Length: 397
Ligand code: NDP
Ligand code: MG
Image (cartoon, rainbow, N blue to C red; front, side, top):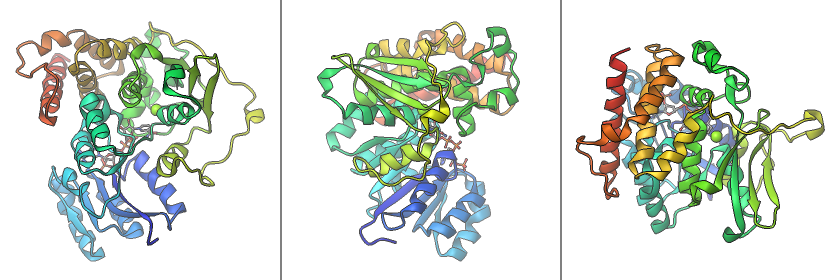
């Protein structure tokens, strides 16, 4: 462990991004110490990670899992926290320098907000938290002047490309999308897809929710919203282009007609590494690109008939602050039902559209205020209104 090393708290360490973070950290033992590791219920993986990285504290937010695994953590001499709401507390520990937000879902919002309030550096993959937290979180980020670094590959790319010019020289930013497994399918084929087909992403290996979101293109919709808040750009300057090879992750067009792009192999380790080391670069854990071996890179407009949810990002951003919250809550709830095998992929696609189209009706009389949120609870209340609305839509299926 390095004396001058940065102390990391990794939320969601057992997931796809969390494991990638630890893979990068393993390469630089003098630069990073892991002081907190947290997950929901994957006690066996967390225990293994704890025995390798020796954090001071671990957390499992699932009480049953914590009870099952506490003996193992005791043996290692590592404190295990188990309360569901312990994460906003652990991120603010004085030993923590940087918080890696690698949890999935809106559950990551309260810890993210707490880390910002505590003035910690934030490295975030958890786009759902920023989509829901929106300007409320970004105001605090700016107020506290914390370093707030994206891990999402497209946003990491845009962050890097923006360094090539001044803010008022930017004419647009473009996020690329692989198109997922249904890029070349008809609408009928897509709606009839099996879970196995949905989970077979052509270029990225990711956790279950983000894999489903990539198949519906909701992942890109959430990323447009993420980019709007993170880079403070109007929605009409944020574009999406399909790029099946996932080599160009994003590009920025400047007023002089130049486009600056970031290219690399589709491996999240590079975006994680850049979030940790920027603006410096270190010899990486990712293999360099061989463009001649790739031969050809394709780019095309997204098919809005096949992927109607992409337009919802722009609709949500045109509306009140609660509309991105609604889009995320509806999607998160319905994707959960799909992953548990309760609904088919076709039903997921249909219900996401039905529920989002009826968001204003659902908001009316539900008891949350549509005034700008002043507290985190205002956002969480809106989230639960649209979660319940989506759950009620599930009842008929
Ligand atoms: P995974 O499903 O693989 O991992 C999710 C992690 O979050 C797990 O460690 C899980 O713990 C933990 N977690 C979930 N809910 C809770 C909770 N309530 N309390 C504590 N821990 C919790 O997801 P990914 O790693 O794929 O994605 C993580 C985030 O990064 C998502 O927001 C995703 O959109 C984003 N992202 C992912 C990319 C990828 O390539 N995977 C790319 C860009 C962004 P447990 O294992 O115990 O369930
Ligand atoms: Mg992405």
